[in-house]
Image (cartoon, rainbow, N blue to C red; front, side, top):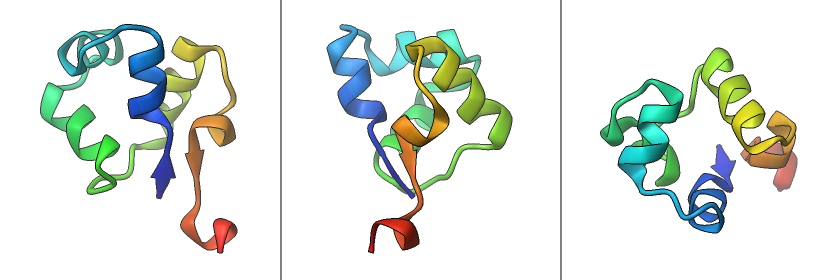
Amino acid sequence: MNNRLKVLRAEHNLTQAQLADLLNVSRQTVNAIEKGKFDPSLPLAFKAARLFKLTIEDIFQDEEAVS
């Protein structure tokens, strides 16, 4: 799954640790999502979307839909 989490985090001047705290996950989880090694659960995707005031689709894109 492609995502804009790293870009959004940088735009909001957040570290991975700060974002992790806001999402109630570990910094390693944020790192793995940003690198595309881990897809977030639906509740976590909703939480990120609410945090950045975007839709889930604005942050996360299905790789098959992009192709």
